[in-house]
Length: 97
Image 1 (cartoon, one colour):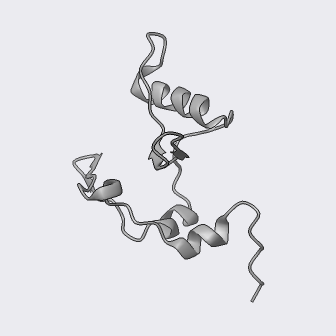
Image 2 (cartoon, helix red, strand yellow):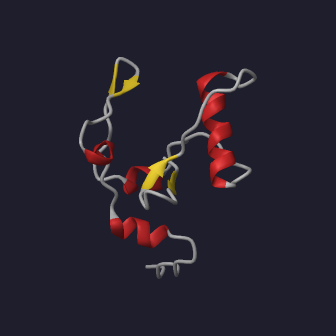
Image 3 (spheres, rainbow, N blue to C red):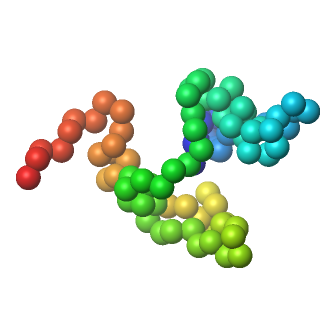
């Protein structure tokens, strides 16, 4: 999930926007809007990685091929602050055991 700090609301929110006629469907529009709003030119869609499994405290279940998004605040997603700090840009590497 890519979040951006909303200038007026002062909240971290998902990237958003609209679908253009030449977008390759909803996924294409989401990627285009995310690139435009984040300024990150080489964004790609989600890939399951170890950090993704560590980052959220609870998994979002897939029901009939769709993610069952919780109705709690923040879409019910609670991030692990220790993992955020560990993998933050500029964070010091962990010592090798």
